[in-house]
Image (cartoon, rainbow over the protein chains, first blue to last red):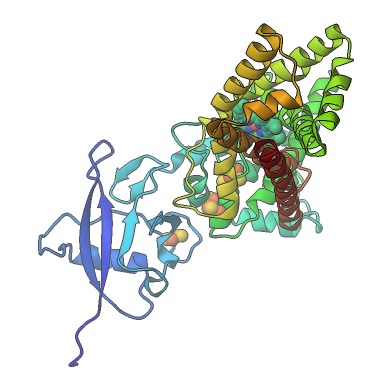
Length: 251
Length: 207
Ligand code: HEM
Ligand code: SF4
Ligand code: SF4
Ligand code: FES
């Protein structure tokens, strides 16, 4: 092979620990067709040498499914929040800039702690109550008219892209963010889950709930699963208004 | 417990659209009447003077001062919760979101100046009633003209984009298509108001 091997330059924002200062390092990775960001990070892990020839600690990041279903590999790629495993090098401007999604606490390098979303899901009761004193029969049938919507929202992989892009999520605000908010609608659609709809709606009316959304619509632009977040936020806005009227006039 | 945030936020939205919306429409209409000449504007202002004083002051306090103070103070609190990021996410609606906050920041000092100078000092303390002649001479200072034109445009943008976000906040416009239709319509409304504003400001300056 006479041709020289093509390289892809990565500029990576790193950080040694949760409280350490960030710094950047640059790496060159051999180009190959179909190369994506996770595959490139694996190459760097095998051969962690910067462009100045310095051997450094391998870059830490998180990934799992490698097919855009687990959500783990979310990071900021060329300024945008997205999944590393489905970010093809061919479709990105080079050099490729990688940074951790700083809306979440950084553990190390590109590895972040997204557990705040899990806490928010607990807060909105993102589950269906099935254990009780009653007999558990077959699963109830889904409403065929809302099944497509429920299926769409159920694709959410708590990746956190939408929280990273939302201007109202961050240390300056207590907003739980679009993903956990919209999950409330999924469970409100469920034939058993809907029994707890008033609980979820009341949780959304609390501090940091749906009212903290300012309609910038960044969430719907960045969601890798194309969930129509702003549509369901509007629907939930209707639902909490109705719930508020019930709260006022039913007691 | 009682979802105080929810009610405050909804009240902020209602006050912005319905109460302050009427105030800004009144300002556009009165100023636009100056295009018909001094008599047209002064007769309109005289009609307003015919409202009995207790009712007029009641309207000013409960229809403008208190709602505006609430919307402005709670609005500052809301604006401080946003980390505007149109540089990273330069989508159309994100720019509108950012402009909603930037116009709000401009309106805070502008409205303090506008209300203290024209309403409290000129009309209240010096007892000079509002008239075409007063504004015509006020708008001979180019700095005042520029700051007032910007203030009017900022308030109008904030109001018109507020119509769009109001429709989302209250779940009126739900789907992507109706949301973009509302967005386009309210920006057309803003353009129309902006043209009227430029026309009457130019009229004060030129005639
Ligand atoms: C004086 C300073 C003002 C400040 C600091 C301010 C602040 C804000 C903020 C931060 C929002 C966004 C609220 C949200 O995202 O939920 C907003 C919305 C709004 N404002 Fe203001 N504002 C001011 C004056 C005005 C004036 C003069 C008007 C009327 C012309 C107005 C009308 C509106 C409307 C209609 C909305 C939309 C409400 C919604 O989205 O539901 N505001 N304001
Ligand atoms: S529409 Fe609301 S939830 Fe979505 S990014 Fe904007 S502020 Fe955040
Ligand atoms: S809603 Fe979309 S962007 Fe947000 S966490 Fe779920 S999959 Fe990710
Ligand atoms: S590794 Fe699962 S989404 Fe990327």
